[in-house]
Amino acid sequence: MNTYHDLLKGDEWAVFGQFTTDQQAGKTRPEVQKAYPPDAKLIDLVPPEAFNVGTRPVIDVIRERRSHRYFTDGALSLEELSFLLWATQGVRGVSPDGTRYYRNVPSGGNRHPLETYLSIHRVEGVDVGLYRYLPLDHKLLLLRADQEVGTQVSQAALHQSSSHEVKEFYFIQDCAVAFVWTAIPYRSEWRYTTAGSKLVAIDAGHICQNLYLACGALGLGTCSIGAINRKKMDAVLGVDGEEEFSFYAAPVGRVE
Ligand SMILES: Cc1cc2nc3c(=O)[nH]c(=O)nc-3n(C[C@H](O)[C@H](O)[C@H](O)COP(=O)(O)O)c2cc1C
Image (tube, rainbow, N blue to C red):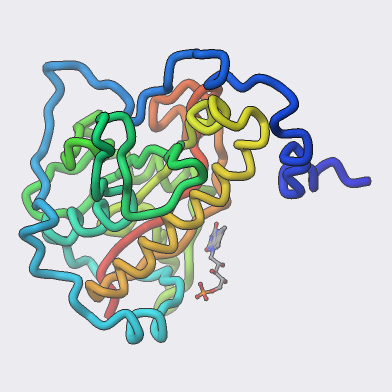
């Protein structure tokens, strides 16, 4: 028996319903978006109804989908970044009682247990630094205006590189913007207890697949990054490593 398989088997579902979940026990519903200080610096994004980008036919985008590990030094526009964030975690509607937010990706039980951090290196009009996406506000929250954040994020992702024209290209450090997703598993566990863990991993796949498709629609490229030194990345992002920890990443840039 291989205990490493247990998470993937998800056998907790066989006994689901035989014990009380935190939701059934009346415990407080976890926040759907991490709180932030009232004096935080926020950056307005382009609203989805104003998008002029992303109109390429989906059949072409799917045909051409592949992982990219080399990017040009071109910048992204704010509209392009707004489109990528909307496609991966954007909110498309709210329930009448205001408690449920529906997004552009599916999520087990609509729990949406992942948060999006960005290491911004080249986005027009946005300073280099570490940011977090606020899906409910469709804004960016500045966490740290730090020129070194790209190198730090890259090193926490094993400083991965590819060979391009005989030199090494550090595609996480040298991309235009690196996405890093953290997991807040309690959002799923509140409803599903330990059965929620497998759902968190599946949810992450949907988010990154939408990033691939959204990049394809804009002439941008990306690459899923699962090889992460979790503790190092948690330190770069400033998350506690228990209730919230780094989970998955993806560099984005212009492709030739
Ligand atoms: C869950 C997951 C984790 C991955 N992790 C990495 C990674 O850490 N580094 C990397 O260069 N590629 C990574 N990849 C990209 C795969 O290597 C790539 O999808 C695969 O080789 C197929 O190539 P394609 O995406 O171009 O079809 C990952 C892909 C997935 C889905």
